[in-house]
Amino acid sequence: MPISGLVIRMKHGRVELRDQIASDPRITLGDLQQRSFLPAVLETATLEESEAVVEELLSREGILGVDIVTVDFSDGIVPTAEAS
Image (tube, rainbow, N blue to C red; front, top):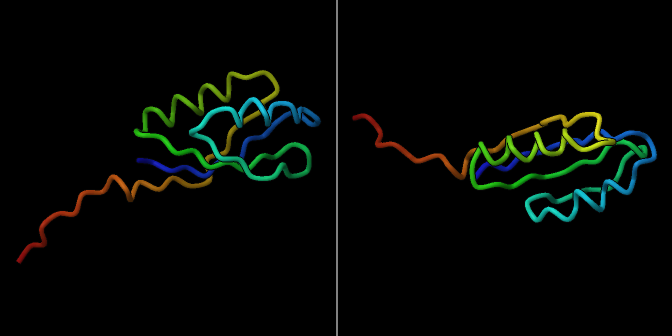
């Protein structure tokens, strides 16, 4: 289950986008910064789903970009047997 840290860059003053984005249960939002930067955490079942969500965000009018700050794949890592 990839967990991604994002910064969503919005057109200045488009704060109504925050409510639209918050309606997606896979996205947890932080506080809007400088009226344009919205920190977010995206939690999905697969990397493909994460990519689709980011693409969907980018398609919204008023969103200038989505910066992917970090991606944690540790939940999906399967330990391997150590070589002896």
